[in-house]
Amino acid sequence: MNGWGKRLVIGIPLFWLFLFFLVPFGIVFLVSLGSPQFSVPPYSPAFEWDGWWPHFVGSFENYIFLTEDDLYWRAYLGSVKIAGGSTLLCLLVAWPMAWIIARAEPYRRNVLLMLVILPFWTSSLLRIYALMGMLRQGGIVNSVLLWSGIIDQPIQMMQTDFAVYLTVVFTYLPLMVLPLYSTLEKLDGALLEASADLGASRFATFWTVTLPLSLSGIIAGCLLVFIPAVGEFVIPDLMGAQDSPMIGNVLWGEFTRNRDWPVAGAVAIAMLALLVIPFMILRSSPALREDG
Amino acid sequence: MLRFLALIGFALLYVPLLVLVIYSFNASQLVSVWGGWSFRWYVELWQNDAVLEAAWVSLQVAVLSATLGTAFGTVIGYILSRFGKFRLRMLFTVMATAPIVMPEVVTGLSLLLLFITMEQMFGWPEGRSILTIVIAHATFGMAFVAVVIQARLAGFDKSIEEAARDLGARPLRIFMGITLPVIAPAVISGWLLAFTLSLDDLVIASFVSGQGSSTLPMVIYSKVRLGVSPDVNALGTIVILIVALGLIVGTQIMNRAEARRKRGVE
Image (cartoon, rainbow over all chains, first blue to last red; front, side, top):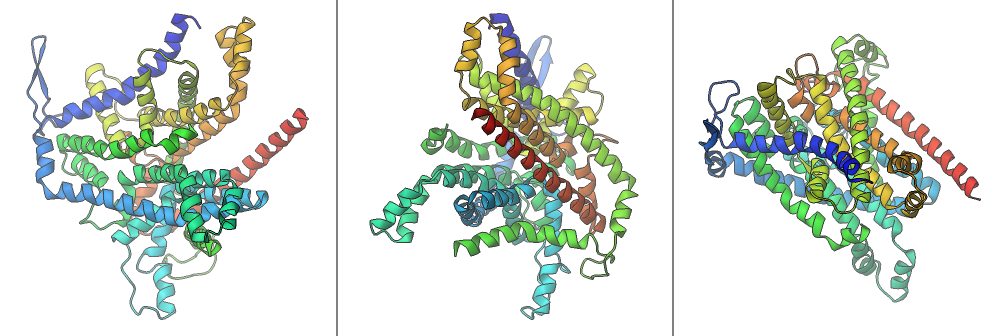
């Protein structure tokens, strides 16, 4: 392809991504260096123009403020805990599913795969609403437990961490099952038989053969669940306790309720730091690189 | 044992949906009381103008942003897998994939600030509307489409394209005549993915939408926050039905195409 044609083909999407992806982050960063004030827009700029020369008047105060206030630390660490914990739970629930699907005969396998994909294509908000209907005070879970006599008073399940964990697992389960399935499906059954013939117990075979060979799927699935879960807004907002928000809710609250755009900007930049580690794992994992 | 555990997983996925479907036919207003079968909530849903209007907004946004995102995403995927080294490639790769891992609140906030800044500096876009939601959705949609296209191109033999080039075909003709037909299934699944992601998005749309451009998830969300609204059950049932039908028909078509291709090879 000649030079100009190629440049044009690269240039148009490059320009779009530059304008609608990179520039916005620059703006968020600049806003985070300002301070809130009563004006439109409600913040002071980080630069003032001295004739032609920009002149820095912002500060890193907002970032210092984030480290000093307990609320932000709790939300930050709480998000990592909830996202990490529910990722592990998701893995535990998804592994047997992926295994059964991978070992099923072709027709059954397709049906089961479709059953995993279907919820993923329906609206996640509607699925969360379905779960809310089950967990609320007068919901079906409490009704069944009361009727069977296991409890004599409805349990408070909404607005608890339990509800958040359960909902995250429920929402992101397909994202864990699918990559696990695709590595388990490629797994050579002869290796498992060889291991058994050589006298390994089923657990030893699982631990030394199956698990290491499905590692790339495990890593991919965990990242696919952890990354959206850590920045989750809807689930903690609808299901979580008011006094333990996740970091996404803090950002939303600063921006809408407090109208403190600079602090919201600083929270946004701090959130990106949470994703650096998963992103590095993604890039450096040899297991993933083999797959291409 | 494993079977039993897997069953628990499937139950977790489906019991809430099943309960939702059953309760959408509940005549009673109360969630805990069964008042007999009725289509009452479907009728109420059909008469709810806010829901219908929002559904129309969502549909427009999803079609426009998926189409725009697929056009750009296909080109980006093609560039990433076929153009080799070029200046700014590193920046290009990072910008093309980063929207996938970005938290929704961060994407929403940053785009809203961009639109506000642009409006102040250039007077465009005027306020927030369907247009700003389409831009936002197209930007993350194209990242997903690019990944799908790249995966498809990675498994496709380059030598056919090279042969065409050696025979003197121009790049555009090679792309239209060879590459595009080969990646067509990936383009379609990319479009569907971008379409679904757009229909599903609540957070980003909440940031960048304006007066009169509330999307369906935004309307559902405000209904859900206010408390129990049985017509949302009816809406959920309709969505599940549409997706299930779409999946069944889609797999049938794909299976048939596959069978035809196999016959063609033989």
